[in-house]
Structures are given as C-alpha cells and as structure tokens.
Image (tube, rainbow, N blue to C red; front, side):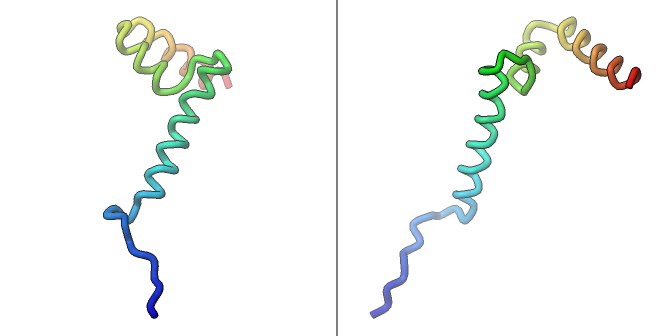
Length: 68
C-alpha cells in the first residue's frame, strides 16, 4: 500500500507566510508593550497626524547620525 500524505495545501509557501506574519506581528506588538514609540504603527500614526510629527522624528534621527 502506498501511504503518502495528501497535499491539502494549494499554496506551497503557506508555512513561510504564517511564520512571516507571526514575526511581523510580534515585531510590532513588542515595542508597544515596552512603551517605545517605534515600528510601522508609530510611523502610520505620525503620517495621519501630519508632517510635523514625521519631520520632527526625521530631524532627530538625522541629527543623531550626524553627531555620531
């Protein structure tokens, strides 16, 4: 008898998609739990608030790189 497992997945990258989605969610949730303001959610919030927030953060990062 041939006892092979049936391929029930139509997407060959299904497991890697789940792993990447989990890693993305963890990388966005952990900074929020640590009360640090970084990540894509913070960037989206800055964009929604207006360019003043985004410009201030960009200025701080550029100044830190120039001073280093």
